[in-house]
Amino acid sequence: MPLTLSEKQTVVAELAEVAASAYSAVAAEYRGLSAGEMDQLRAQARETGVYVRVVKNTLARRALADTEFSCMEAELSGPLVLAFSQDGPSAAARLIQDFSKEHKKLAVKMVSIGGRVLGPSEIDMVAAMPTYEQAISMLMALMKAPVEKLARTINELPGKLVRTIAAIRDQKQAA
Image (tube, rainbow, N blue to C red; front, side, top):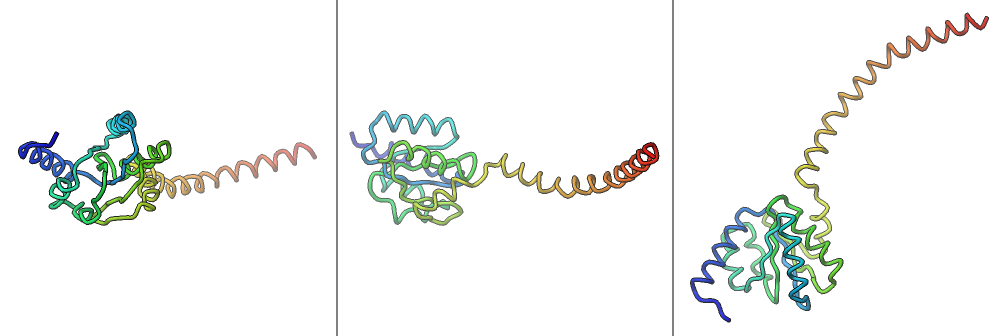
């Protein structure tokens, strides 16, 4: 059943709003997936904070026109599912990558991040990016390491003196 003009405008407005606040986007061809498998993908997307939508390419072009994902417009062709990362830059790529391992018919067509379109092979790089919490933890570990090393070095001096005195005491007791 075709969409009415007002329904199309609603879809375009919703997709444009999501795209404006998204960190990255992934377009994947879903040809051959069953409705049940698409429902599984949508359920996993809700759990991971990823917006997933199957929309006509003409409507997607209109919605993406004034966003940083406008670079994807030229390659929108065929039956595509669009996934937008709402929580972090790698969430959509990780979702699509994991789902395509189980369902070989889901084929990544393009990835967009930072206003650039990346090829399907780049999904591994984007999916490997750390989440916000992981990045903060890595930064804290880097900031903490020099202080810990300094504390261990300063603590080693009295420890070495104590071990030397203990060795002299043991040597005198043995003699």
